[in-house]
Length: 334
Image (cartoon, rainbow, N blue to C red):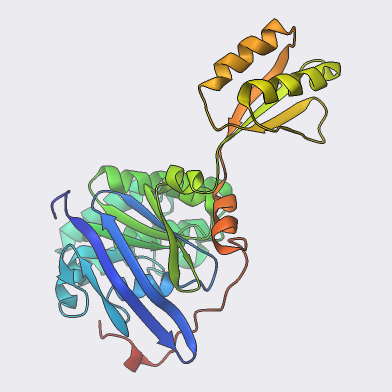
């Protein structure tokens, strides 16, 4: 297992062009070992192409990529021993059971018969698939298939796992289960690099996030750093008596020294909060003024606001599609 202080991924100036489409146009990434790193962007932003280059499945046109210090182009065989990749269905036969498919993959990776069976049972239990272990894959739901995909990628217990939009199309309950599984992977020593177009997924999971748009990284940092980059948090107050709202607004503006906004919802005041330590003074002033509050909350900027501010469009808005050739000559031989 690589040292926790090492960089799991170091990418510099990665580029990949398909015809006239610059799918990836100078991407830099630094992923520290033992963390969850999110690559956030809309469809066609370049996320999948970036992952494929890092995973030695696609040769970059320019730039370098190192996985735990090993060059992905010059030392692909070593890199492949350090990574697990999801994104394709983990099965060789739809009529075979989950157990049988995992045993076959284990055997292909060099495990003995008894070890392969033990590993399959262990992974099925870890991913909540024990009850469906003997069921043919053709009868699996989408969520069960996604969990099996992830289980298969972990047979060799790789220190780095690439998850390319692992929860796309899953129901909320199954998504939450996948999130817990991803967190457990990191707790047991793995590093996870995941791509997503779900803002809440990046917010919930990632230690750091790279916002990618039209083939470029346009922002990078922790969730809090990215949110802070687009503005301050806002303070939201709701007064118990709507007749007090005018006086409450005057006190808010005087104490916080800001301009407030009264929302369309009766009795609610929203104001930017540049200095958090002034909130205590505000509460005292409101109480002194005889104004009773029904509710108070602090709202940070959302990742949706971050993405909109940085790129000028929403994360769900499609960019140019990543048109990858089916020509095997374009891909590195696995």
